[in-house]
Amino acid sequence: GSAVGLLGYVLTKGKRPSVRSILIFSACVACGGVLGFSMLPRENLVALLPTVLLPTTVIVFAATLLVSLAVVNELRRRETARKNYIYKMVIDSLPDCLNVKDTDGRFIVANPATAELMKAGSAEALIGKTDFDFYPADVAQRFREDDEAALRRGTSLVIEQQLAYRDGPKTALSTLKSPVRDETGRIVGIITHNRNVTETMQLEMALADSERRMTAALTNMADGLVMFDKDLNLVFCNDQYREMFPLTADLRTPGTPAASILYASIARGELINIPTDNVTEWVKTAQENLSRPGTVQFPLFDGRWIESRTRPAADGTCFVVCSDITQGKQSEQALRDLNMRLAELAETDGLTGLLNRRAFDAVLG
Image (cartoon, rainbow, N blue to C red; front, top):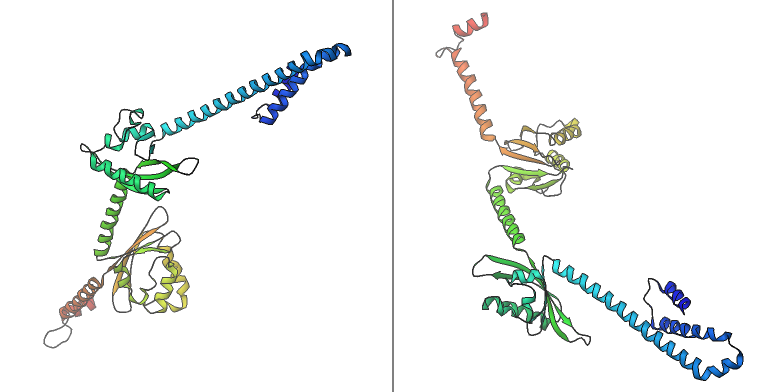
């Protein structure tokens, strides 16, 4: 019997014994006990068979079977208990709220995070209670309506909930509600998972507000602004930038390479004074200028002058601010014309129009 038990242990080590293997093991143990009687004389063996051997074999088989089943059940119980303990530890350690209610809204299971959210003393204090025992009536009623909506739907439901205490700020929750069904498929409760997304929503609102302010600033600024990525593809530009270049405004959109814009500007006559025999080299140089800080002034087909100021970023992107400096250029030209006129008047006689002594001294000097 010991040998059979040891062999059974070796064969089933690390495995869960099945009912079939238990029956075989019990039969082997029972038969093993009979082997000892095989040493007796035949006439004695025949005499003992109906009165001792058969009853003993049946008793050993039944006892082994019952003990084996009991051991297997105990092992299963311990394994189930261990798994339940692990599940409980996982649920209790979750920072998010996780709970189960019956169809009447009473808590069946809840983790500590749920108790903290509801300002209950402990998770155990929630069992058998409802939302009305912890929340203001209006909040509890909304939560109950959400539960009933998920129960009627019969499938999982993700909703946004707002929780406001009388003595505190509002809390934003992202909530998953999923019906619980028994073995017959009947809905017997609802699982609720709450995640506090207050900080996330506040950050999203702050980001949206910042984007609105930035958009307003870019829209109302007088200069044109354009951003290129590290591959010199246009990422962003404001309306003022497109309006500065009317002949290629259709190309100045996100995703367009800077080289395509430059070639089109030359081909359409928007950029002037570009050497026609060296366009490729000029475009290459213009692209290289986008990778380093600098200021460039250039004329356009309609007489306007543009000043572009390039500011590269550490990640390879670059920002270019374009300003219309036509008025300044015109003022500079007017000033140069005036200086030339004054110089001319200083060296010419006002009555005769002939060069005066000052012009004569300048030539001799």
